[in-house]
Image 1: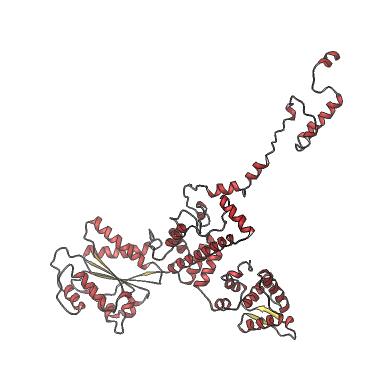
Image 2: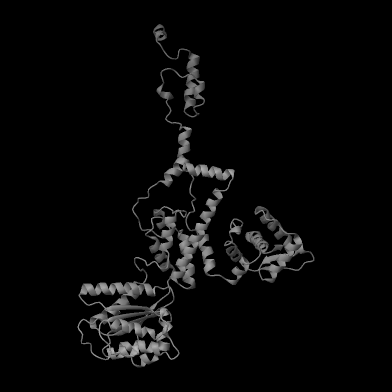
Length: 518
C-alpha cells in the first residue's frame, strides 16, 4: 500500500511541504493578496484556494467615486426625463435640474417669467373675485340693464389682471350662449389730460353704434343718448372699465359723480366698473348715489398671504424646465412681502433683484478664472476638457433674497451702516465676529485684535490704536456702538447697541464683507 501510494503523482509529496501549504490556505481567506505571492501556487489550482472576494482595480475604484471626472461628465449630460410629480415646496424642486445663470437664453427666460408685465397663463388665488365680477357682467348683459361696480384693494393684489381675465370670459360666455357680447372700453385714468376727457372717450365708442345729438359737451351727448330709447337694432351694451379711478377725483367731485350717474339713466346701456386702491371711495366721494339708492356694488381684493404668494411664484416658474430658487428663498420672500404689504409686484421685483445678484456672482467667478495665474490656467485646461464641475449653488439662495429684501425695505440703520467709511464698517464686522459667541461687551483692545485680523485677511492696511479709538467714538455718537468710561482707550468697554443681525444684514450687501461674516 505504501509503494502504491508513493508511486502516485501528487502535487505535495513532502510532509513538511504539506504542513507549510496548509497554513497559507487558511491565511488566504483573511489576509490580502500580497501574502499569497510568498507561497508556492500549484500548477493545478485547488478549489479551496479560490477566494470569493475580488479586488477591484484602482481604475475602477477611481471611477466609482462621485467626484471623478467621468461622474461629473455623466451628471452634466444626464437627461432628466422623469415624469413630474406634485410634491410639497421643499421637494418640488428636486424634479428639475438646476439652471445655468451663465446661459443667456435661460437668464432671459427666467427674467421674463418673473416680470410684472408678463401675464400669467392662469390667474390663481383670485378665483372668487373673478366669479363675482363675471356674474355681475353676465346679469347686466342678459337683462340688458345698466349697472355699476367698484373694485378696490391694495396695490399689487391682482385687480387689473382679474379684469383682463373677466373681459375674455365674458366674450367667450356670450359667444357660447348666442348673446351679443358687450363692446368693451378700457380706460386708464392716469393717461387722461383732464378728468372730463373720459366722457369724450365714451362718446367716441358709443357714436360708432348710434348717432348722438351734436353738442360741444360730451357729457350732454351721453345724457341725451341714454335718456331716449334705442331704436337701432343690434345696439350692444358698453362695458366701461376705468382703472385708477381715484385720478378722476376733483374738488367738487362732479366728474366722478356724473360718471356713475350715467348708469342710472332710464335707457342707459352702460356697464361701469371702476378700479382703485381706496376701499371707502364710494362712501366718501359718492354720497349722493347712496341717497338715490344707486350705490355701486363693491368687491374688495385683499392683500396676498404668504401661501398665495408662494403659489403664484411657483405657477410662474412651473413652465421652466429647471430649478431657479431654493424653496427656503421663495418662502423668505413670500413671508416678508406678505407681512409688509402683500403686494405681488413687490415680490416679483425682489425675485428679479435676487436673480441679478446671482448673475453678478457668477460673472465674478468667471472673471476670476480668466486671471493670469497658475490656478486659473488649470481651471481653463479643465474647462477645455469638459470636466470643469459647475457650482452646486447655481440657484438663487436665501442670502440673495435677503439682500434683495434689504434693498426693497430699507431702514435708516441699514442705510447708515452701508454709508459708513470702509474702516468703520470693518470695525462693525469685527464686533459681530467678537460678540458672536455670546459675549455682550469687550474692551477696545480686544476689538482691535479682531480688527487687525480682518484687515490682515483682506490685505487692507490697518489704522493705529489712536485712530481706531477715535472711529469707535464716532460709531458711539451715531448710536451703533456703546462705549464706557476709562482712563486708557484700550480698556474702554465697548458693546453693540443694535442687533448683530442688523449689522450682518447691512454688511452682507457689500460684497467685500460676505466672506468675512461667514
